[in-house]
Image 1 (cartoon, rainbow, N blue to C red):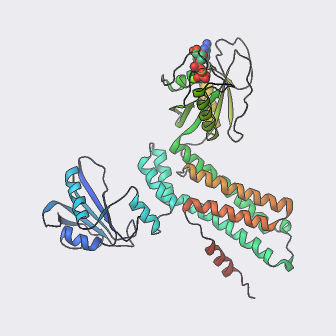
Image 2 (cartoon, rainbow, N blue to C red):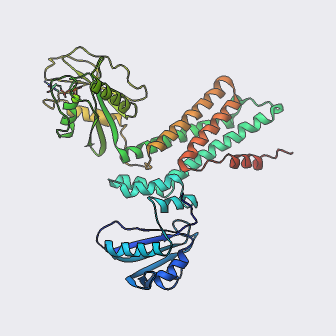
Image 3 (tube, rainbow, N blue to C red):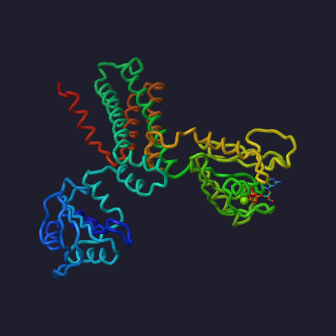
Length: 438
Ligand SMILES: Nc1nc2c(ncn2[C@@H]2O[C@H](COP(=O)(O)OP(=O)(O)OP(=O)(O)O)[C@@H](O)[C@H]2O)c(=O)[nH]1
Ligand SMILES: [Mg+2]
């Protein structure tokens, strides 16, 4: 079990050769280990040229030592950084020396985890560190930095604050029924509910844009066997990723290919054709296709324009669907809903790309986006659903208790994003703001 009573050590720079290699230690034993490693504890936050030694006093390297006493450090604990020469062997020797002095090799993300446990970062910020490091585009990096600097968390906190005020308002009214409050005639409540609804919409849009920056806009191609899904994916990506044959049921597994549509990262997902009575392997493929659809940002329902139109049955209700009529090179003059394309000749592909861009909602890539993960987007959606539910209960049934309950659920969902749910805290606030004993 990880406890913050031990001292951890790890290389902070990537493996390989470089000008500088940094070894970082964090924990209560840092002052003692610093004395052993470099002879004395350096003054806080002052770079000190030092010789790094092992427990037997053998010198390993020389470089700069930096000491950050807790709580004013990244982890909130005492932290020592040794900036030595960037070779894998010398870095490993310094790490081993610290371990010999009683430090433990840090697990993945453990410095950030300690920062979270010591309230230096909330969960969304800790996740943003990983996203910033992993960001594949400048826009994704900017979104991650926005979240890391606390903008996303602050927006969540501001929304939680609004919900808290609403709850205090509603619960006070419920607790003093003799004052007989008509919730529907309560302008302050109505205004508060409107403001929250607006804040939810704004946050969801920005988090969703951030998630697309990070993961790409996921488009799943589905349809009957032989409609040309695999051909279309190959044509859009310019790769021959998927096998194409005239045998129905060629694709059995999920295939992915990422493309760039005017700066929008799009992940195309090819799936097994949907049909009744498939074979065993195909059946599993169809199950996977349905699973991919359920978590998609959009579905392309691919039809063979020369065949009778197959109704787009069984598609998940919440995912937008675009009908694509493929094989337009064979279909003479036939028209119908959706976009007509030919995976064979490339006709209509410009219109299809534009339509996918349209589905992604004209997102200005990156503008105001927060880096966000699926879990954030889902928690936000969960919170928004509870909020909408509570609002409906109030309007339709004048049920203030139900509103209060749904607001509580919404807060809990938002608290999962930053990792800061506490109902005691809320009770304390209610108590302070209202003189119950009057
Ligand atoms: N003429 C014409 N033929 C096409 C077009 N697109 C695909 N085909 C042909 O249609 C057949 C099926 O294509 P696939 O891409 O394998 O179809 P699929 O939807 O992936 O099929 P499954 O994987 O079996 O579900 C192949 O013989 C393709 O060459 C098109 O636009 N025009
Ligand atoms: Mg296929």
